[in-house]
Image (tube, rainbow, N blue to C red; front, top):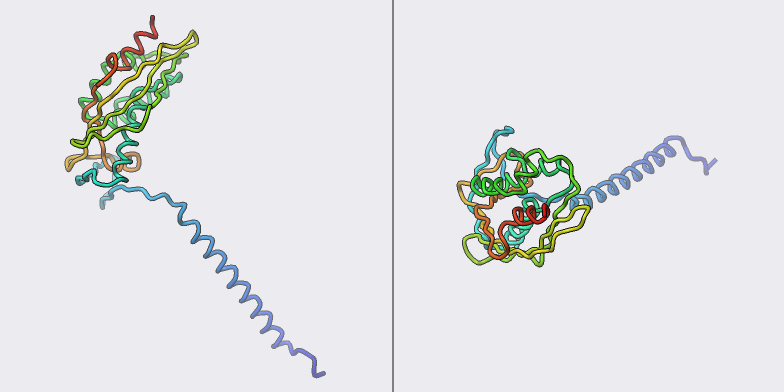
Length: 224
């Protein structure tokens, strides 16, 4: 009778075991959640107290004095070159990319730069109602954009050609100068806060080397 375990003692031991298991599970879950936090990608954007879909966000000036900011601006320049010059075979994709409301080129350009863009031969042809077509123009970068050292000016080199089912135009090399605008007067829409958190805009787009605008010369050659 001395080896008999009384019911209260058995229950207490069982409860202690259950408690120990619960602690182990909670510790495991806590460790798992802690390791998941690095998966959250930080994004820089500015918040205001009242959020509306049509609300503008006023940004403060940020000088290009850090390696991270310079890398961000170079990536912005590359994306702008792609959005502006690359042509895909799907006309609806091109309309979404080039339209004057929320198209990528429009949101990344100042009024004057976008106006000049809409006068190119390729823009007129595609946005004028051209149906789906077997025609594409890729952009191939030679190297990363080069910061010119002042006035937010960047220089970018790339190779450009257009192709359809019958062949492709002869590849041409272009050097483009792009000046970015980001000052105290910059505004971005609330819907653009993630895609363009710093409110950058292309304020100048000029052909430094190459036979005119790629969207003019590439289109003319493709018609020949």
